[in-house]
Length: 140
Image 1 (tube, rainbow, N blue to C red):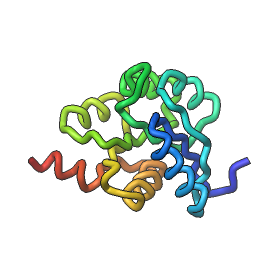
Image 2 (cartoon, rainbow, N blue to C red; image 1 turned 90 degrees about the vertical axis):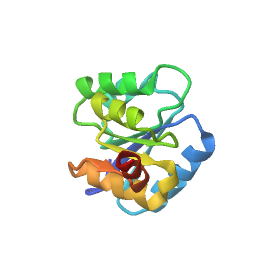
Image 3 (cartoon, rainbow, N blue to C red; image 1 turned 45 degrees about the vertical axis):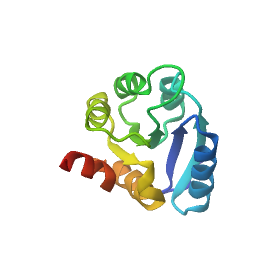
Image 4 (spheres, helix red, strand yellow; image 1 turned 90 degrees about the horizontal axis):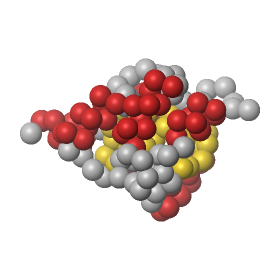
């Protein structure tokens, strides 16, 4: 059972080092509950609808089904689960595609832990978030 006020976070990323870093960060950070990780987006809709994380951290460059196509399906199937794209790929077209698919936020991995934690909290609270690097992409 989740403690009151704790945000349940599921990670979808095929980079084991990124996943482990996120696991260590979120399990050591008050207010967050690590729900595990998927290495592809293939089963994301079923897992998200069954386990209802508050926030999914979703990479966009992984093997298997296109993560943004899966995001669009998940947005319809379980709209209460919010997604933050967490990626090293920051391009206006990709950000736009993520937003169109239903992402509540887009954070560049280069923006660091603080930006990611802030994004999770903000998105769980109903805010749309773009990290500083993503915002710079739009300023060009």
